[in-house]
Image 1 (tube, rainbow, N blue to C red):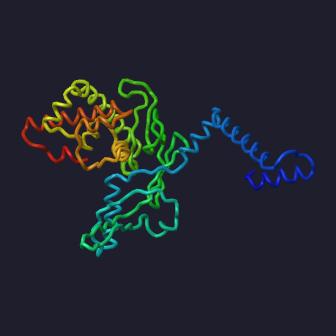
Image 2 (tube, rainbow, N blue to C red; image 1 turned 60 degrees about the vertical axis):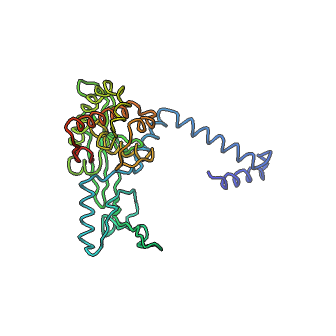
Image 3 (cartoon, one colour; image 1 turned 90 degrees about the vertical axis):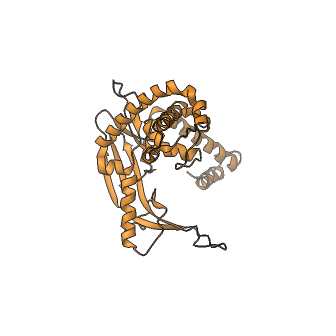
Length: 307
C-alpha cells in the first residue's frame, strides 16, 4: 500500500478505537517494517536470484559495430541524398517507443549550429538506431536492432550475462585453453552476422592474446619510463591487440573521460588503472612493443593505430 492508502487504513482503525497514537507514527512504522521485509527478501537466495533476473531483463545498450553502423548510415544517405555532413554516423540507443520506429528502423538526429556570429558551423547529422539486448535466462540472449528481434542460444559450456559494459558471453569452466570467467562483450554486428560461434571464437582468441600479452607485460613494464622518453604512446588499437574487447575498452575510455581517437603517454594511462591495473599494464606493454617495432623498421603503419 502507498502512503495515502495507509493513512486511510489507520484512520479507519482509529475511528473504530483499535489504534492509539498518531496516524503519522503508525504509517512511518508500517513503512519501516515493509522496507525491512523487502531488504530481508532481497538478501535471501531467492531474492538475489529474482534481483539478478530483473537486472538481466532490463534492456542494456548494445553497440552496433562497424558493419551495422555502415549499413544503417548508408541506408539513410540513400534515402536522403540531398543531405550532407553525416559526421555523427550511426549511434545505438535504448528506445522502447515503437511510435518512432513504425516506418523506419532509424531516425535522423541533428545537433549543433549551422553558423554562429563568427560564421563557424558546428552542425552535425547522424542516425539513431534502437539497439539493445536482454537475457533473463543465461541460456538465451534477445537482441533488438531497429525493427528486428533475434534470439541467440549460448553454446555449450558458455552462458550469457549482463554487466556495466553490456551483454557478454562468459565461461565458468576451467580448462587448458580458457581461464575461469573469461568473457567477451560482443556488439550487435558480431551476433547478427557471425552468431554465437563467432563470439566464442573471439573470446578464445582474446584469451590467447591476453595470456601472450601478459608475458610481454611482465618483461617490459620496467621499461615504461625509457619508452616514454623514446616517444611511445598508447592507442585504442593497442588495447584490442592485448585481448580486450572493443565494448569494454570504449566503456573504460568513457569512464575516464578520454578520447578514443587520441594517443596517450603510458604513465598517464597507468595512473588511471585503478582496479584494472593488470589489464591496463598489458595494454601499455603492447604499445611499447609496437613502438619499438616501428623504431626498428623506421616507419609506422597507419593500420597499427586504427581500430
